[in-house]
Length: 141
Image 1 (cartoon, one colour):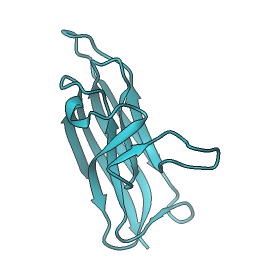
Image 2: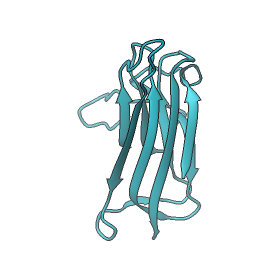
Image 3: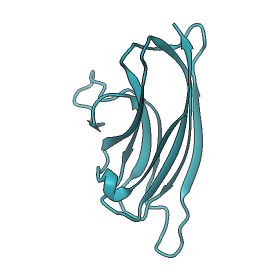
């Protein structure tokens, strides 16, 4: 399980950019068969806030597509929210999402040294609160 907990001023990466918060690296070749993320996001800002589960790339990823054939990031699951609370009435966006692949035909191969990361975006606001737990399901290749 991979855990991330932080505030918007630590992330300080406005959408469409996302910042890496936590990573699980693989020491041997592995097959990804599923992911489940449970998260809570309290967004008091006007900008988008969210979590993104992706293959590990850089510290910060720009999700803007530069051409019709480019893929800026291999994002598996995203959970985003616009402003969801006002000061004095906190109502975080709490969600659970899963993504599963077929165990024998549709696995995502992860090579030794690669990883899965939790990324996030947020305005620079210490009152924006983030917490996520990611379960990663794999098989040996």
